[in-house]
Image 1 (cartoon, rainbow, N blue to C red):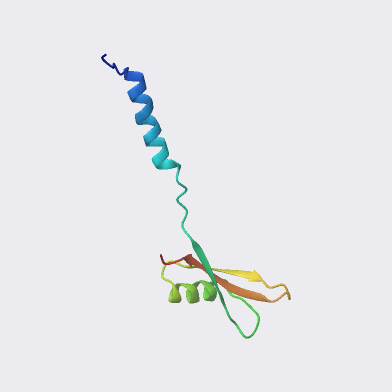
Image 2 (cartoon, rainbow, N blue to C red):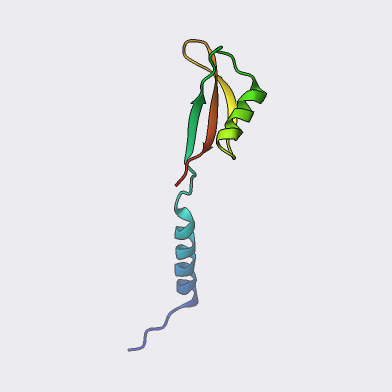
Length: 80
């Protein structure tokens, strides 16, 4: 008995394999590091400079602590 494969069935399997390859979630892990400033203030330029000094591809942002003090937080990609 001869088994005949139809072109649409082969196309369906190729499409399924292609889509399953892209269905895996590819998210980069993002780490953050609070940078301590004794005065409790945060200047955006200084925050960014301090973050880049520690992590080349980092982004420094000023945020507010729960106790209403400004602090610098450095966001960067975690090493694998």
